[in-house]
Length: 199
Length: 199
Image (spheres, rainbow over the protein chains, first blue to last red):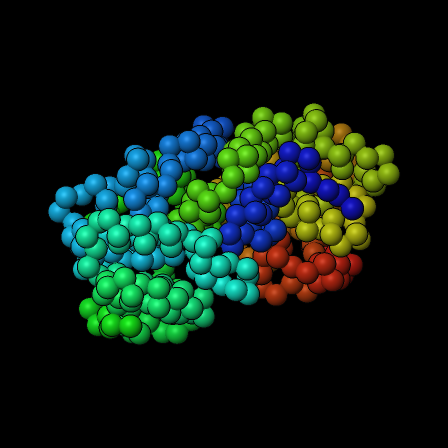
């Protein structure tokens, strides 16, 4: 049986670690790369290294950022009294696409999932409490996926934040259960934002 | 509207050039890369550069190779009197998976497609004729995809090679029409090889 040349096998292995890329797609991508010009491949390799070098987490909200704090946190036109809590930075992009929301964000960097051993202490919950305590935040909109993990996280946050005296709201269940926020169309997300309810 | 930080937008753009990767998948992959360790990203970038540096085309059959000629062409146990003609190197891997074929290969690096302006002169046809003339080849198995382009190429080669006095055969049409060789299961490909017919 013929095997891939070692550098090719190595590349297929590395590509296969990317999300949603099975061995077959990895092979297709590797063959495509072999047919691409050296400068195109160089550009991709550089983009990979550059993104890791230049992008870090915002010290305020844990969104991705090129600076100490991200462009949302630095924007004086945003309403700093409302914070929308999301699991991942990509959820911020989804909500921004609705052009409906003008507050700030807080990225938990995950969702509570006892099944996977992910407990609240492993998320950016302490930092959220800190922001609420020091930044004059009046409302926290919990915008987690309508899944088991998302709902668990939302309930946990509601219980935790109610005694603090902050208003806690939840995205309206216009989203089909089991859906991923990141794939929702702007209109659905807009109405989910609009009809958010008190927890 | 919020935009991605520039290095992130650049990476998403570069990833989006890969085959089968839309903007959404590119974004998912980029976010995954941002969450990955620096050493994992380094490994991927290096694999990309290494593959372009170390892999070239076999001087005999135009398969990918780390050496002047590929491991199939160098293997003295292979039957050098039979050559299987394929469009792309990935088709070689598909046929090797059947463990049925012990001859050599010839990679055309494409298929004849007048619609896309791809004419036989742009493929490795001259080199195939050269091999037949000088290497004692007795049979040419044309193993192109059962598509319009694949069939056009097969007919073209049959017409071209018949006068040369070489036996020209075609993979049996056990493959569903419109299918891609690269995705065929080994059993289907095995029988297609076994029942190959004279053109």
